[in-house]
Amino acid sequence: MDVYGLVGNPVGHSLSPPMHEAAYDALGIDARYVTFEPAESAIADAIAGADALGVAGLNVTIPFKQDVLGLVEPDPLADRIGAVNTVDFSGDTPRGYNTDAGGARRALTSHDVTLDGANAVVVGAGGAGRAVAFALADAGASVAIANRTVETADSLAADVGPAATAHALDALSELLADADVLVNATSVGMDEDATPVPADALHSGLAVMDAVYSPLDTRLLRDARDAGAETVDGAWMLLYQGVEAFERWTGRDAPVDAMNAALRARL
Image 1 (tube, rainbow, N blue to C red):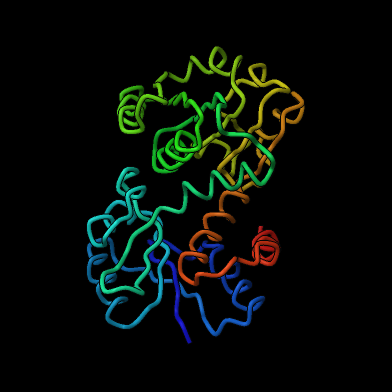
Image 2: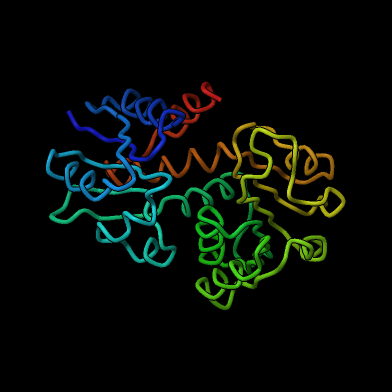
């Protein structure tokens, strides 16, 4: 039996175990997905211990995504983003990946959102914002990053490259006027009826994705629907980052429908 899991602190809230175990059941894979919650000072020992014990793969969540980057051999995308959220132990050296970026891209393209040539706006320049900005730029979009702290947006835009620009939050209305895609990569709207985006800046030419999935139907998404925009809830990004991890670990196409059903049953 193969063992996969999630390492973070805390991890009791995670929806990854039912999602991945639904995939194993659907494909008849003899595997389990478990959670690990080491102390923040013990992440190096946790990665080394997982490798020594024959754990097949780990997802990585807060607060360890940046720390794990230096403990594994990151692929080029994870290295550029500066964070690892998936570790594969199948080789001689643990390999690190960032499936948040692929999860964001696949969440949008699964809803027929065209990214190549699009004008995209990303709200937030933290961990999720970094992954989303790289994903959109690599897919051929121009990316305007709006953040409360402009210096952080400047740093991210410099890392992403010439496709990205940095802006303050008060530029959102102007940026969105000509935008095709909007992604909220902040926690605004999580367990609260709030939005980081002025409702009157939204329009029917937008595709709007909110990385927040609790609640699933955020105020931003309600405002976007009222404006006639296409909406993509945060569970799709969560789903597809898990799909990418599963496919990295197993080399098999993920049973997306089974994983999605298991995920949404817990939301």
